[in-house]
Structure formats: structure tokens, C-alpha cells
Image 1: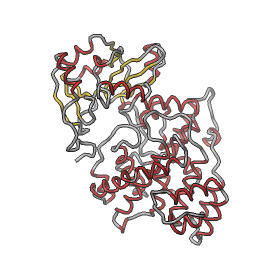
Image 2 (image 1 turned 180 degrees about the horizontal axis):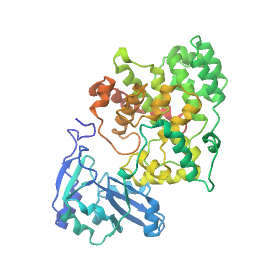
Image 3 (image 1 turned 135 degrees about the vertical axis):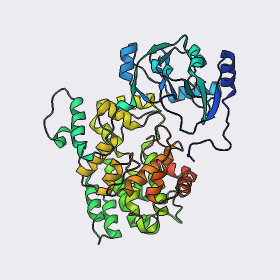
Image 4 (image 1 turned 180 degrees about the vertical axis):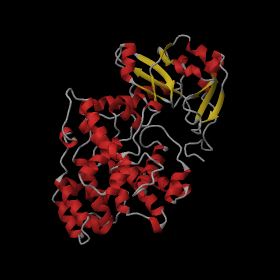
Length: 468
């Protein structure tokens, strides 16, 4: 069974307005549950873009990436995805939840990639999540009478991701930097990129982390030297998520009575690392705020770790840290490529059907996973953590420390299939559960516990950076 498949109470028919529109247009269709198995070469992706001139409906298939620069060359317009609030208002008028690829539904002009007509049928969003419309291409063609055709989609198959060649990361990052500079850079990578220094607090925490004789007093004294970090640890312990009895009065109180040494040392390290970069001002619309996604992922990984067979259970604190920092490469991209990070955000908005890796690889030649793991290694972070960040998109990774990226991969995908994160929902391969030695039911139970505590976790996230 696939997580995003239709739940028993999900409608199995398209919304009335779509049924009536297709009937009026004389278009035959078949309503099908969206079980994620329909070929992406035939799944129609519709996106509303706009600029000062107005809105434009753009349609292509989900095996393609929409390159906004190429669209600019074709149209002479600087188009970006319309604001989420505006799209929601437009859809609400028709009682729809998602945008169907039916030009007659909007008053906007339409541009479609000519490759969509190369297949015998198309699978189109109905406006109701979980329900697709299967329409024969010959029946769909008349709907495009007033639309314009062009070739603008970049086949995803042309974008070669580096999932399993970490030895190439330094060269590829260097090449990506060179591509965005006016001169040929010959220096070594660490001279080419403005590497942020590791925060002094993080240095101290790392020393404690590898010292078997470190105590609660040691971590308390380090945290207390950083007032912002101390306040965050205390507020974390006092949050409704932990439901601690009585008032939390000090860092030591937070550690001894609520959080424990292991959690605090990894939490403090994660916070110190993120502080080294800071959050970018720009971010894609409709993406889960950074800290919210980080905390949810860490909480799910915490549950998954406890569900693993005891004999192969890794260090819980380190898996929690992997969840907290899993999207750290996002911050690094914003730091290393500040003039171009906005371009990445706009492409993420225009390609909601694609995982961010394809967009970053297409635009930069590297992904956030590569550059995040590279910086972890540069800062001498634990190899388990580096491996978790680097291979989290590789569900079949079976190299050294495989449990860490496997757990991260599973947690991220489980949350994404519940609408937390960014990018499309995807089927989780059974092999990932098998490699971890965890049942699908246990994994879903772990994510359900986190979702049931959503309000408390949101409050935790808001303490770190409101709006991000």
C-alpha cells in the first residue's frame, strides 16, 4: 500500500464544477485514484505564472523541469509562480483544492509544451487531491485550440544527479562556483567559497560530545555562556511538547529534569551550527518553514530510532541531530550563492512536481545534499552526520553508517507524504523499511505521534525564527 493513496473517506469523483465543465466541452474522461503509479511522461503539470502583464497558464508533463530562463527567452517575459494566496482565492471560487490542467477553467492565456501530445492519453489533476482524470489525447486536443505550443520543458532524464559519488563533491562544488563568477577561479575550494567559521560554542560542544567524561555541569557551563542558546534550551524544556511538571528555572534544570544530557548536547550543537549561517530572507512559497521542518523531522527520526530492533539501534542523539540538520544544505546554498538563491526559489515554485535536487542540479550543477555534507566534513562533524546529509535522497544506500541516511530518508518522505516539506509526494520503497528492519505500520505510527503533537511542535519551531 502507498501512503498517499486515497483514504476511505476521500471523494473518488472530481468536483462538480469540473464534471460540468468537461460535460459542456464534450470531453470524455475516467476518474482514477492517484496512487502515484501513473507514468510521469503522461501526467500533466499545470502552473499559473504571472508578471506585470498578467497571468499565464503553463502546461507540461511531470517528467520535465520548467526552466524559467528558457520561458523568458520564448516569451520575453519575466514570469514567476503566482502568489499562493492568490491561487487559493482563485481555486476557492470553484471549490477546488488544486489547479486542474484545463485551459477553459481560467481566463488566462495558455502555453503548453508540444510533447504533451505525443502520448495516447493524459492524467490530469481533477481539482480534488487524490483524484486524477484520464483523458485521451485526441479528446484533450480541442481544449488547446486557443493555446500556444512551444518546446520549453527540460527532460528530467537529462539532469544527472550525483547520489553516490561523494568523492566528486569538491570538484562539482568548485565547478558550480566557477559557473557563477566572471573569472576562472583556480584556488582550492575552501579559498573559492567564503566559508563561514564554525561558531565557538559549536567547537566547545564538539569537544564535550567526544569526551566520555563530560558531565551535565560541563554542558551547562557551555550553554550558559551563550545567552540566546541558554534561553532556547530552557524554552525547549518548558514547551507543551515535553509537558514538564513545574517551572523550568535554569539550563541545569532543563537538562536534568526534562531533556537529558544526550538530547541537549545534540540540540545545542544543531542550534550552534545553524547560527553560523542564519536563515535566508527569501524562500519558496508553500514550503514548510525551515525550523518547523527540522523539528518535525528530528521528532519522527527519534520515534523511528526507538522502533528499530535494539541490536542495530544507533545512537539516538545523533540520529536526532541528523533530523534537525537534514536540510542544512539549504542554508549553505543561500550563503554560497546569494545572488542566485532567489532564482532557485522561483524555480522551486514553478516546478512543484519535482524534487529540489533536480532544480539545484540543473541550475547550479550541485545539490544542497552535496554542499551541506561537504561543509559538515570541512567542520569535522561526526561522519555519521555527514553521511546522513549526503545520502538522504538515496533510499538504497548501503555503505558505512547507512542507518543514518536511511532513517533520514524515511522520515523526510513520511512527512512529505503528509504535506510537511516541499516537492511531490512519492512512494516509499519496501526495501527501505526492510533495510532498516522496521515495519511500515511502526513507521506510520511514529509519524502519527508527531502529527498528533503538531501544535506543540509548531510552538517550539516559532521560538527559533518566526516566519521561517
